[in-house]
Amino acid sequence: MLQAPPLLFAYKEKRMTQWLEFSVEADREAVEAISELFTRYGWNQGVAIEEPILPHVDEDKYEIDLSKPVTIRTWVPADPKAEQARVAMESNLWHLGQIRYVSPLKVEVKEEEDWNNAWKEHFHVLRIGQHMVIQPSWREHSSEPGDHVIVLDPGSAFGTGLHQTTRLCLAALEDYVRGGMRVLDLGTGSGVLAIGAARLGAGAVLAVDIDDVAVRATRENMALNPAVAPLITAAPGTIENVKGESFDLIVANIIARVIIEVAASLAAALKPDGLLIASGIIAERADEVAIALAAAGFHHYERRQEGDWVALVAGLKERHP
Image 1 (cartoon, rainbow, N blue to C red):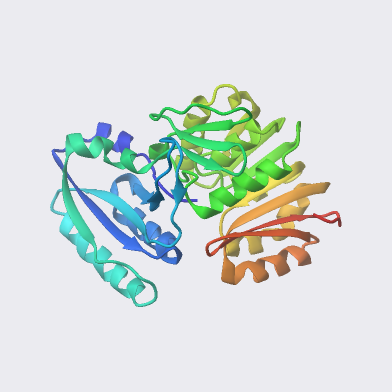
Image 2 (image 1 turned 135 degrees about the vertical axis):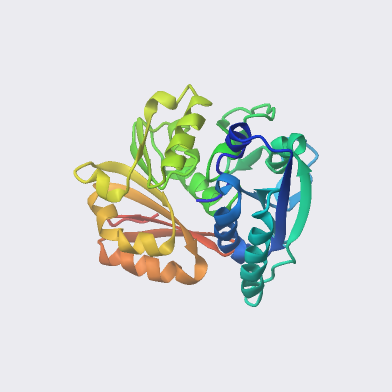
């Protein structure tokens, strides 16, 4: 879904001596809107989301403090257009701040050498569920027995696993993926869910996204996970591009509106006993999504929630969770 298109690539494409780092702290409910705003002005749409961290005795583990605000950052070249970007962002943030908590926009000058690695500071090894682990490619991690490690470069993609919706989906995949399943990752972003499904034993995974940048990023992250990369196919497209295909499981971490719009197509792409994991759903719209899925023939099995975000697990075959 979110969060960090290719910043490192941008640095190599155009050499500059200074960058401006724009950042705000905000309520979790405002993160998606601010990220979308920052993608309009950030270099190559680059956005980083920094969760407040509770320290852990083990250096490669931590917990997210859900009681504190989230920091959102983007980077803009220090050129004559930067002031225009600042004014536009401040105006939009002011309006958003009338609804949710948003701190004043902070601006810091970053030398090119500092900026090259600045965004990496905000990504850590993250454990999700029982055995799912997201490992940024530049950090070390000592695996525990049974771990399913996803090596990821958050600087080259949307979706780092830090957002609640991604965590909800990964935890649900851990519970529902079975060996040999054919899985569709709709709106793949960074490919984190596709790679996770493959790590959990899926026999084949199709990862699709409407954004060509996301598809390229997924392929790059597949290369960081060579053990499962042959099981994954990444391609541009939507649910309409997989008509005629049939999947054991679909994971759709997108947004409520789109899930509602494509509910019937999701049902058509599933085997009769297949499962749907749908997320990217703000809590206040969860019932609306559940109703749309029911109208498409789905039975609602499970609702999972983290903060204000919800994931629904549903299937075409009536059964108990």
